[in-house]
Every structure is written in C-alpha cells, then in structure tokens.
Length: 425
Length: 103
Picture 1 (cartoon, rainbow over the protein chains, first blue to last red):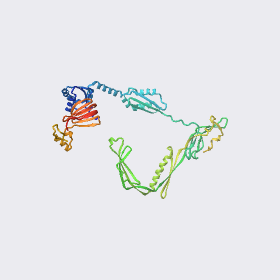
Picture 2: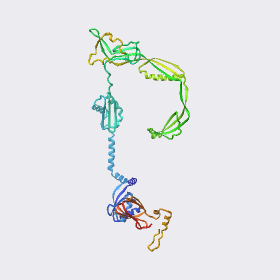
Picture 3: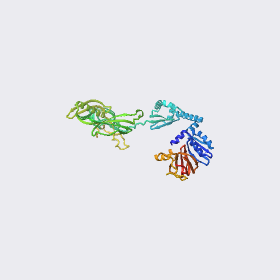
Picture 4: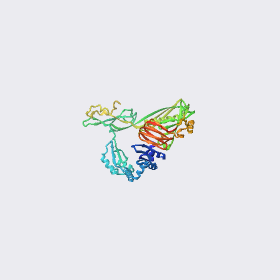
C-alpha cells in the first residue's frame, strides 16, 4: 500500500520494450540505478515493465545500446493526472461553472411545504396564498427568508389566529411551514348540579346566582354539605309550585381555619469534621470516573466534599472530561443543644412552608394565631390561620340521573320542599 | 575442506574466505556471494546479483559474482522488481540450480 502510494505520488510509466537483448536492457537499467518493477514477458522479444516518470529519460541510452525500442503504453500517477487536468481548461471552466451554479441555485427557495396538524385551520390553498402575500414563495432567496423570519411568523400569527403554534423552518431549498391548530377545551358537563362545601367553615356570605340556597350566614358547614340546591321553585298559575332542576351557581364565602403543629427538637446530633481526611483525585470521562489511586480508605461515616475542575476548556466544550477532587473526612458526632429561639424560628419556617401548600391562592388571611411551649427536649409550636374564601364547589346532581330517561324533569312539589336542609348531607 | 585442482595439487582457500570463516563475518558482504531468500516455492529475493542472463516465463538465469549463475526453472515466472543489487522473482519454482562459481 505504501509502495503504491509512493508510486502514485511520483508518477510512473508502463513501458513496452521490443528487441533481442532485453535482458541486457534490464541489466543496464539496474546498473544505472533505475528501479524497474512489474517486469513481465508477454511474448518472446517483448518486455513490459514499470518505471518512474523521471527515470525514463535515463533509460534512453540503454535502449539505444541494446538495440531495443521502447514505447510508453500508459502514464499513471499524480503528476500525469494533474498535468491532464491542467491542460484541459474547458473541464476547469465547467467545474467552476458547475460549482457556481450549485451555489447560486442553492441560495434560493424552490419548494414551500405546508403541514397542518390538529385543530380547525383553513385549508392548505388558503395558507399558501397567505404565504405568497407575505413573500414566502418559490424563487425567493434564502437570505431574505432568514432575515424576515420573525416578521413572517408575526404575520402568520395575525393571519391565522386559530393557530396555536406556527413554525417556519428553512431546510436547504425547502421552506416548511408547520401550523398546529388550537384544541378547544373540553365542553363543560351540562345538566343540573348542586353546590356543596369544599371545606369545613363558618359561612359568612351567600350569593346565589342559580338554585335554592340551603345555608345562610352564620351556619357552620362541614366538607360535602349541600349549600345551594340545584332546583328552582316556580309558581303555577293554577296554584302550587313547580320544581325545576337547574345547574346551581353562586358564591359561598366562609371563614376557614387551618392548623399546623410542629415539634422541633432542642437537642440534636451534629457531625463534626475529624482530624483524618483522605483526598482522591479522579478523572471523569463522559459518565465514567477513573480514580488515580485507591488506598487508605476512611471507613465508617465520612464527610464528603467534591470539587470539580474542567480541563482543556477550548477543546472540551461539552464538558466531557473533568478533574475531580474528592475529600473524605472522618466524622465525629457531637450532641448540641439548640436555643429555644433558634428552634422557634425553625419551627415557624417549617409551619409556614407546610401551610403554603394548603392555602388556596384566592384565600384572604384574616387572622393568624401562634402559640408554643418549651419542653425538656422539644419545642411544640402551633400555628392557626383563619382565612376567608369561597368554599362553593359544583357537584353534579345524582338525583336526576337516577330518574328514568325521557321522564319529564319538571315535577310538582309542595312550596316548602325546597327550603329545608337536604337529606344526606 | 580444500578443493583439489586438476593437476592434483590441493588448492588453497583465499585469505578472505579464511578470514570470513574464522571471524564469522557476513559472506555476502565481504565475498560478494549471492544471498537468496525464498518464501515457499513462489517468491524469491536475490541479493548481490550481477544481472540477468536469461528471462523467460519458464527459466530465469541470474548471474552472480565469481562467474556463478543461479538458474530457476518453473512456471509463470516473472520479475517483480529489479534494482542494482536486488531482484524479486515470483512464479511457481520447480527447480533451482546453482552451477559454477566459487565460494
């Protein structure tokens, strides 16, 4: 392989020699220091061999003296190839023209693709027409599209408000416009329903928009209690009342109390760094760590600190390789007494954090009460927060569903039927 | 062992040969002896040759120093390369004769 590369680099000739003293020709060539290879005798009186291009002129005297005739059958190698290429100017011009043509043609957009996904969007012809008006059409330069990318997106967003997401991607000579339509939210469940209490609380205000209220301000309700009944009482001309099932709606504001109790220890065990420590250097490559050495390991509980250093920043952009220094320190445990103030502050923080998960965003905090008592080993902290919030929650009425299908929902009831507390609270 | 001349006298080895044999020096360097390296029966490298005497597909005769000759007989013989002091031969070797020459 190496020999072939070298021969190709220097260039070689395939020569056919004809004559009677061909052995003498070979001997003379060898004596002159000319290297010949691939020597064959295709026929008596004929010899085929290969010789480097620059050595061939030195062979001429040998041909003459041996009375042989030489003929170059083939020229091979880089020098001859380059010469052939350089001699043919038309080919170079053609190549330059071809590259330029490719470059020029590749700088234009030739295909505009439209992909519509999901939702109700206008048809592809309408989108294409809009794109043409904006300036996205075959024949436009890619640079123009790149520059106006933001503007195209904005104009498409204005033109198609029903689209939830629009993307204009330039892939070579293709502009691909992808549109995803808005998915409408699922329709709310229709039908009659009641309003029940979402939490336990003291009702302070009831605003009924639809239905019959069953509670009034000052009532104490538990979670799940019926607050507004999904029925409307209408008077009849003939006398009496008609009960019509409706979808109850309204606001029921109530005072709700939240309680959090935290026990904070006053005596804790704290790790203290011991005198013995061990430093281990490792090299990380991707997700594999190669420690340099592993000796004298500290057994038992240790305090572990890790420092990392990125090496070869210029060629290590992806942070594939980094040097890691691990410090393992011996740990001794010490009994520490925490001051009540410190424990109280910690308990307050913990209670507030836990309460933040329980309080709804719309709740208005009306009152806040905290109390604590310090024991021998623990501090007990209690936080009570009073809020004013809407506890109304829609519950689909099951009464109507139990009825036979096709049955008339309107039914006659006594006027006092809707005013009482519903059973099953 | 010393050779016997036609007249019956024992011919003495040249001084150079004695020296080479005594000190174990490379003969191909000091005595111009040909060195043959064979790879099975289809490849051969001859060093220290003095040129070709005959080259056909059946026979290759190589001249060596001191009027020696190496005759290779075989089938489809061809010269792989030929340089001033070394040549490579390929083909199916059937017989190798080393007539004449000294050393």
